Image 1 (cartoon, rainbow, N blue to C red):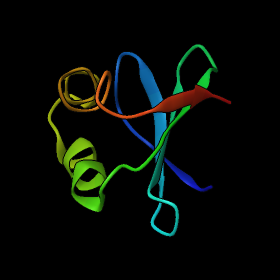
Image 2: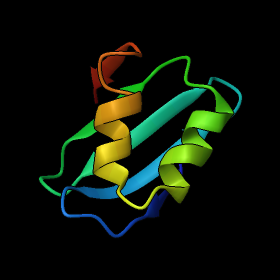
Image 3: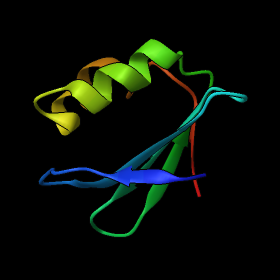
Image 4: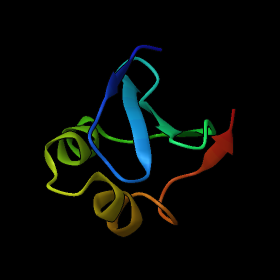
Length: 69
């Protein structure tokens, strides 16, 4: 999955696979997490958010199934 670099104090890059609705987040500590069944509008939201980390905490963590890659 191709990820796009973002400016964040905690997140290095974010990617999204439309076919599987999988959101992939690479953190600055080199860990990668995939979040499953994430709608396109949530990906659009995190990419356009003023704070990617805050959006992640408020709208994704604890909402969608995830796995560390």
